[in-house]
Image (cartoon, rainbow, N blue to C red):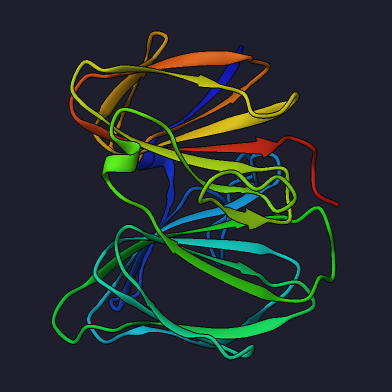
Length: 241
């Protein structure tokens, strides 16, 4: 098993006033030659958006875009006719494909919005743009893995499909709870992101917003030293061209 520790303090950071953003991988003006991607995982942005503010209409193509709201509510509008509000417990997916334009806005005039936006390179180019949104219960991830994203041709439970051999799983672990993670696909890597808490993987300690990339493994254990929320992105490791 090979591991790569990505400390929260080493992420890129920009604060535009209305947007306070941390970047796990190169994004916009922040560049680190060692943080271009993890396999086909291209972006993991940890954003806080001020009340009533947001991203105006902008285009995407040939990217799988996953949004997970942590606090507040996100208003989404796009060029294929979707208008929705995403709240904590819900996950949104856009397959940008041949091209889609959308806007994202903090729908509250009183409270800030916190979200993760994650980009994954697809394994099929120029698909018809598509949109998905589902809600996931807290009980469904308490000390067990709850799969929220899976390959579109390998539908798994209530997970939303994307055009990539990738799985996103989350869990909320009680203090001192140990959970095993087993690789979903041969030669995939796992990107373990600590949303909140303090965990150990082997002898490595990870705290809030730390991450670890893991390759060349079949399985590994995670131990929660305090109550912890964890996201694992199981992702092909080939380089996108």
